[in-house]
Image (cartoon, rainbow, N blue to C red; front, side):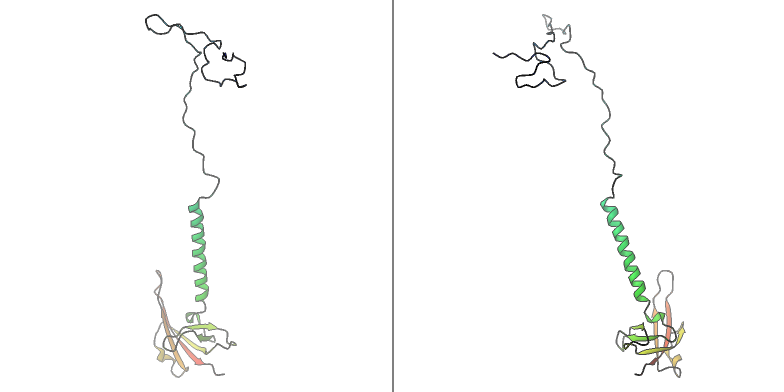
Length: 174
């Protein structure tokens, strides 16, 4: 027959009884006496521990790192800025920025020209600007001044009404 461990002695497997669990009978605590007709007990069986209730712990704060959405927004802004910058620099070579003395090449066709400013020494240069006439689409104003007139009208954005002009061009003879 085995006997339960006494207080301060290890259990049958060399373990101490866990704290907070009620001790087993015969472990040094007095037995509770029951009244004969089922009334309330006269003395407590175990010492009473007061339980203190508190609010649940706060969730951990997220101040340490960037969220996925913030990273995606930053990447989106960077890509948008790159696209705007590339578009701006590519449009700097368009015919609407041409000045007198600039040379042009045609990236389009004779029916739908796409003139672009190039260096005059390049082999692709085909036309030289003789005169720029702003605020008109009348290419007849170039007659007698140049070989041909090229007109273009650009659409405006939200705050501008656009731009219209005529370039008087001479063909570069090689």
